[in-house]
Image 1 (cartoon, one colour):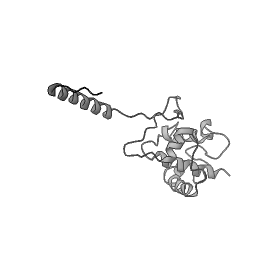
Image 2 (cartoon, rainbow, N blue to C red):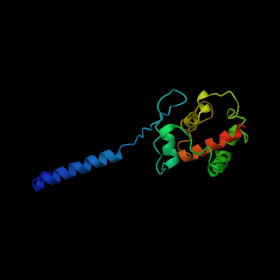
Image 3 (tube, rainbow, N blue to C red):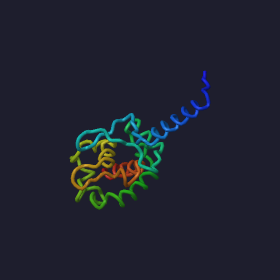
Length: 157
């Protein structure tokens, strides 16, 4: 049951409530995914909250839930991933993924063993790694990262 306050107290309570809401909404949002994503350098938890203006797609939400890339068998997503790979990745990893400045993405040995899994590769792309591999979290969407990973998986055949 709602208790009605005298008008001056009601206005004070309304102002306090508004200030609290503004304070809460202004705080940075940290999304806690069901799957725990970790930094390749120090193992700290990665904050996979969307960047400003980024909308998390159903594919990304599913990936956050279980670490499985839903685009692995999606031909349209793989084609999009190829175009993104050509733009963002091939200058360091070569068109075939064999590596140049960056390590091979198709061999049997890896700088970071975690990249054997899609979750691990996402962690390196999202959070960065050693050498020239900077975080792409502010450059491309998480959805595009998943498409790139799906394409990379087609290179190792």
